[in-house]
Image (cartoon, rainbow, N blue to C red; front, top):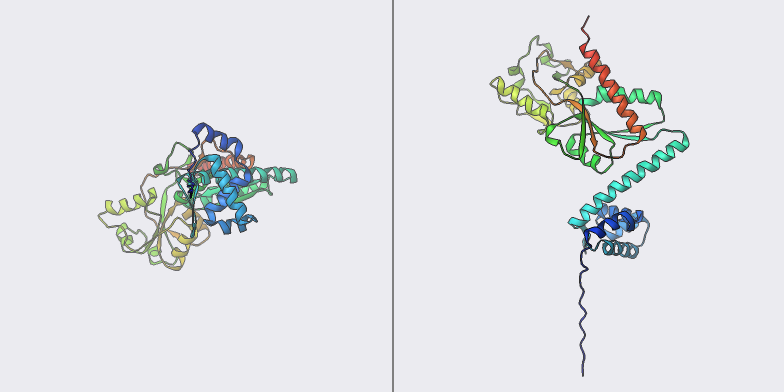
Length: 335
């Protein structure tokens, strides 16, 4: 008599939430987190194994072990590679955050042991870079020259995700209300007006009193569409019965703005402190054109309850002091 035996694979039951807490607190190891991040980055078992200096079977075994701990499928395997599931995306974000805190703590301990002061990672928007941030970093370096300061420029759509996973200590820039969130802590430092600038030899620079009609047909380099300054710029043209410029380049980069301003003869809409810096370096001329608009203040954006190093706290103090000095200078009457 022929006996046929069927084997059926049964997917494990999901781990209860109480056990998920135990997995995150006790069972996950650093090597597990590194593997999850590598798989999420490379989306391939072989390339992840090569990056981690492991064999592919070892990677497969470790991934299976991690998934057993969670009772969840974190990555879908196929002939094309690996793709994170919805659970895998969440675990990968957690892993990145833990590894970022680990690296930061390791660097700070090493810096203290060697007599240094650690590393600071700052996200910077253009509105705060030439004036506030540069002055604060310069003063910090006078006191602690071995402190490493990494400045990453961008807009909030780029910087906030990096802040949330611990890759930035804080952000300095305009406190855009559209990006307010319960997980973020903000601190206003000062208000900053906007100016219209052109290259020093631009035709508009020769006008004694340029008007908005003179600017409407010009090519511009402007802030991104989501920025409050961009919205207010469009409103200024509408207020004067004009359509906003059609020939535009949108950017949150200081270097891109400067390049189009200087090399491609575009009009630029920048914060007053940025305009003052460009004039001081003889890179641009500020047009004698009032820009009567109200904008959100410039300030600090931090992760609520996030880990900050002593070096980061020191730079925060320097930024606050620089902002107070700048506010006093703006209130001082001109002689």
